[in-house]
View (cartoon, rainbow, N blue to C red):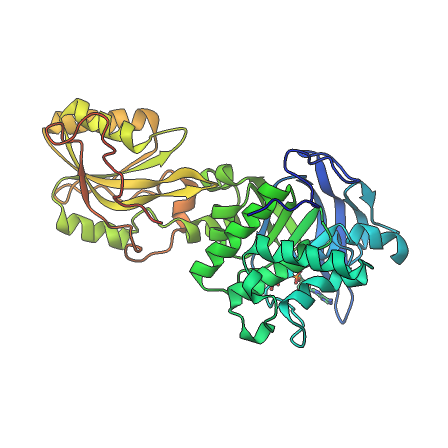
Length: 414
Ligand SMILES: Nc1ncnc2c1ncn2[C@@H]1O[C@H](COP(=O)(O)OP(=O)(O)OP(=O)(O)O)[C@@H](O)[C@H]1O
């Protein structure tokens, strides 16, 4: 894949007129947008937020939370009723159309329904913004070829949108949005109309847009999985307000708001509900504990070392390790079998470095407490999720060498 020559490079993010990587490229200062058709709707309500150049920033919230309106303030499709919106060093508030145009030209946008022109070929769709911007024909053709190659659909240049799959249509949308070298790409529910596999392909393409071209990407979504796999930071919106904002890994590990907890629970189902616990107890007579796996606390190898040190057999009976922001995260539920004192000592050692829920044994069950991580009081009841019930023995010193990846392949969600 050749580098696209006319876009900014990740290593030279200062190219172009705006701010440098890591500095705020989009700034909301107590921004409010009120719609007054019929009743009054405060679609965006006093939002103060910085989005940094070079990051992939997610905006998540339920329907009507104000996500689209917030993002439409960025490209001045809506103008704030009060407060300020600053993009790439330019305060948009109060600017006329002619002064908004250069700011808009540095922003690309893709949509849930792709918004392609059905009567034009793929190449012509991608060329359209260049034609509007007055690029000469030969330069347009070269740029379109480069863009189609970047998004992986060079062979579709002469096809019409009706002949394309959803994923291919969104690739055309991305190529068109990138045509005029934007500094910012806004993606409004850009994967909501796609199947899970195609969603992952499009998200991977957005990550390439960010990493290889240095473009700041703002993703609006109602799917926490999109945030989990793709974003660096996230803002959670409810009733027009940003109720939580932060590093995605931190938000998953320590969600601070009810809405966030509900979203996190939709993306992580690694902890057994009370129904599942009842079934686990029926199947397993040993001590059942759920332990957290993350970067700061316990890696699966560390858990295994503990079991081995105490001579306890541990079988994974539920859970899984997934990735949040490309870092390991999850929980494993073990059945622990061995000498009572040894099991107790292993449980104590687990507790010393990670969060642990002790579910007791079938003979002496402990109440399912509200588990330590705040997300779990909101976790949906239900059975094990796909891939989350894989059972595997760990901690048997006689069977595994010290460097074996004892949990590799067991209970991995994705
Ligand atoms: N042009 C408009 N005129 C009147 N009300 C509007 C307009 N645009 C949005 N709203 C209202 O503002 C609120 C926020 O809408 P917005 O579309 O920003 O939310 P959202 O979080 O993007 O929702 P969704 O996920 O359903 O797209 C909603 O109550 C909506 O009805």
